[in-house]
Image (cartoon, rainbow, N blue to C red; front, side, top):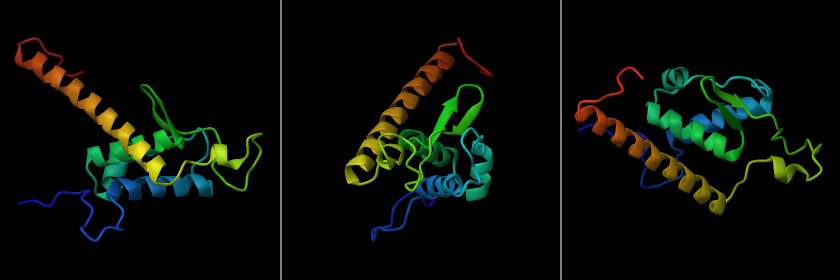
Length: 142
């Protein structure tokens, strides 16, 4: 029997792999190693670097996008968002709280709900593709 990745141990406190990936990328953005507009590493590169599955990397990227750290450009990939997340950089009229990612339990629940909704949509899309393939019509090599 294989061990399932991404499961939190009963004791808790140990971050899941997608959380580690997201935090690593956040730190690269905070440090300036990744700048606004820079392309984020590809899914393949992150899978290789962290020994993670594609789903785990997708969850990390979804989290970064939902928190405002990253944006997607269809056909191009994911990029660092153009606003600053540094708490000490208050150039915005609304102050750093507006530009910093949301934190706390309620915010995490909201992020998880969005990720769940996105996953449900992906499942529905895949189900439709499988049904199309099984019925003889198909979208091969899409």
